[in-house]
Amino acid sequence: QVQLQESGPGLVKPSETLSLTCAVSGYSISSGYYWGWIRQPPGKGLEWIGSIYHSGSTYYNPSLKSRVTISVDTSKNQFSLKLSSVTAADTAVYYCARQGDGYNLGGHDAFDIWGQGTMVTVSS
Amino acid sequence: EIVMTQSPATLSVSPGERATLSCRASQSVSSNLAWYQQKPGQAPRLLIYGASTRATGIPARFSGSGSGTEFTLTISSLQSEDFAVYYCQQYNNWPPVTFGQGTKVEIK
Image 1 (cartoon, chains in turn green, purple):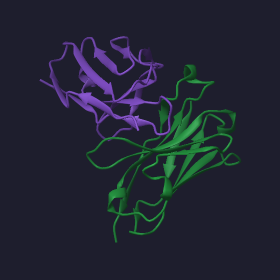
Image 2: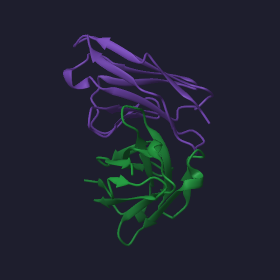
Image 3: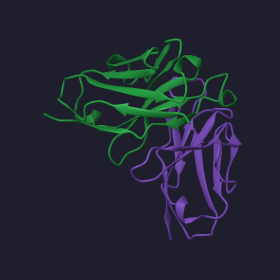
């Protein structure tokens, strides 16, 4: 079955860059779907960060766009998130997820498979 | 940006009873609406997409309805494993994708 697994540092210093990777197994990223990042601050709701298409096209939340870069490495079947100039407000559980595109999930762009999430704390 | 508003914030229900959760969009999202369930310490799980289509493996007691700006998730007979937080999400004309703030379904 399709599985996603986030990895990366659990602690990042303020003003530095948060970097996470999502390894995908059971499905080839280059075959389709969008691949997204969503975060959840402790005790709060979900916030979409951005998504990347298998072709490399990227889509970002306007509220984070100036600080976010999402990239894909089809040779390693993984995609990555970089968030620069982090502050304590970026402390959250970060999830990667597969997102339907016009050819999958009945043409609906919902997130059908999620990673388990990884907690990232921004603190000196 | 389309704002999603869920109500109520908390819903107290007894096992076996029906639960009705609401989600309102600040502008029409057609049927481009999904519902997720999240239990403590777990990732969200897709329940419904296209406003009314159950995702793979989701029990029939979960049903979604609505279109445009008003949507409802109904759990026909609450089981113990259904007590969780539920989020709606719109994906109409994104970016950005936006989520509601969540409804917590707790045991009465």
